Each structure stands twice: as structure tokens, then as C-alpha cells.
Amino acid sequence: MLDKSTTHEQFIETLLYFKTLFSEGKSAAFLVRKGALAGDTDTYCNDYTLNREEAISIVLDACEDDPVVSTTGKISRELFELREKRADAHERDFLAVGSMGHSVLVALGIALQQPERRIWCFDGDGSVLMHMGSLGIVGSRSPKNFVHVLFNNAAHETVGGIPTVADSIDFTAVAQSCGYAHVYKVCDIDALNVALNQAKTMVGPVFIEICVALDSRADLGRPTISTQDAKHNFMEFLKKD
Image (cartoon, rainbow, N blue to C red; front, side, top):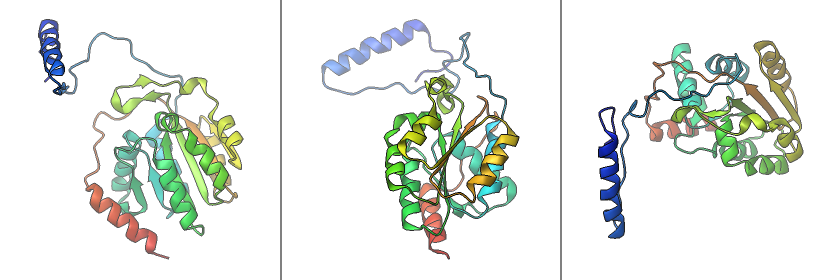
């Protein structure tokens, strides 16, 4: 177990012990407590000013009663807490917990099976980078009812803010070349509202990249509904007319 009290010498001693275990074909791992690796290191940040949780709230207003498939990490955690704050039912959301990169194709499958409904995918830049080929599949199937929303802070914020390469990639150009019918890149609330108002009536697939700041509430919680119950509730919701 690594925590704030672990010394460099203890760390090296443990690594040497691990080496012995590995030579015997055994496994070993470190468990790292929160805050154990905090120190005087450079902290990554970006120049965007739009708060992600606020942006998610604005997108939720546009979603109304539409189903939402959300990527793993803080995006889903913020979505869950916004539903709690609004006293909304969670049945409209599928949180792809522990499934980084897979939310796009989960949402696509639903969109193809229920073409009468508009389906929203809440995604992150790290998630898109992990399975960027999904964009090509979306474009090839061309679901008219699909809205892909990318919250881009150019970092893996959930695991400490490690920067991605997303700040050097033109995601809207990638989406457009993959076959998305309409693409947007927005960095402020006014532009976001314009894109959302148009997306609700457009023939998709639609791609909206939202540039957001690298920050989140220190007291941000986690979903309090089990993954099994959440899945069941979402499936029951999809059965409703």
C-alpha cells in the first residue's frame, strides 16, 4: 500500500521484492491511496473557461426526455449529481462505468434500434481517443437521431489530470470526414445554446465538441445506484413509448 508516509527506500525495497515474485511467475501490485502521489509537481491546465458541470446541465436541458449514454469518469458522476439536484429520475441515463471508449457504440446501437427517439452520447476526449474508430462506424451507419457530445478538456481528469493529445486534434474535422452530417465546436454558453437548438431538429448524426476547463468540485460524489439496477431501469425506460 502506497500512502503519504511511504518513503523512497520502502518503495525501492518493495520493487525488489516484486522482482523476486515475478521471477517465480507470481503477480504483485501496488494499491495507491488518494493523495499519496501529491507533491510539488507541475499541474496541467487549459485556457478554456466553460465549466463542464455547467455545460452538462445546459445539454441536459436540450435533451429533455431523450435517452443519454454517458462515458465513464467524472462526466457520468456530474450527470448523476445533476439528476439528483433536479430531482429527475435516473432511468433515462446509461452510465458506462468502467467502459472507457465504449459509450459511442452503446449509444449507436440504441439509436439504430429506436430510430424514433433522439439518442445523446456524452463523451470525453480521452474516451474518444481510446476508440476513435467508433466515429467511422457512426458515420457509416448514419443514424439520423444521434447526437454525439464531446466534453473536451484535453486531460484524463478522473485519474489526476494527465494531459491527452486532444488539444492538437481537430475532432470536428475527424467527425466530418467520418461521415457525421453536422459538426460544431463551441467554447462558450452562447455558442453552445445555438448548437444545441439546431441539433435538436437536424438530421444526424450530429457532433458537438464543447471545450471545457479542467476542474471539478472537490465534493463530487459517485452514483449511488448499483450498475445492475441502473441497467435494468434504463432498459425498462427504453421499452416505454
